[in-house]
Image (cartoon, rainbow, N blue to C red):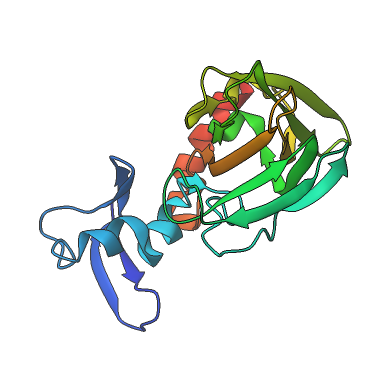
Amino acid sequence: MFAPQVDAGTSRQRSGPIPHRAHGCLRESQNSEYDHEDAHRRCCGYRAERFCGPRRQHPGNPGFESGSLAPWYQANDFGGPENWNVTNNEAHTGSFSATDVGNKQIREDFAPVFIGDILQASLWIKNPDDGGPRVNAIDFLYSDGSNTENVVFQPDNNWNFNDVTSLLVPGKFLTGFSLYGYIGGGEDRTFVDDWVLNVVPTPGSAGVLGFAGLIGLRRRR
């Protein structure tokens, strides 16, 4: 189907096929004058966001690369000599991670995300203590005021990937999550880095109403 379209930030119109998603980004037909745009702008810039919505939603400051905790904050404190803080002494990626010593909670709250739209929830944890067991508690907070807590074990004292997607409660809206520092003997230090909340694309404009309708039909089945 052909229709005149107006590029964001300009007043000019063009006729051509309506853009559609392919391989996670915006693609147009071979005769489009925009086929040779920079790939980053096509897949990650305003046009992909406008028509397809975000593919990946991170919590704020997921790798602590700002050099500070915010919007993360320490909530419950059940003891230990060092509160949650950002350090450049250890990192899974980048230059920074968050660390504490003791049974203390690091938490972030955010706008509700439907569990059915979450493809992956994950984080990287390091408990450098040579003792064991290396165990942390992770909490999920929901829009109805409920929360769930689960225990995750780290197999060694290196950085370990924790995919916690299966721990989410279906049908709810996630509004936050948190992690408690390791406690179990020894130094009781925890490092955390690279939190990820990976969500399905959401429609960004009327240009994808058909796609949105298909999503609605799929969910009502």
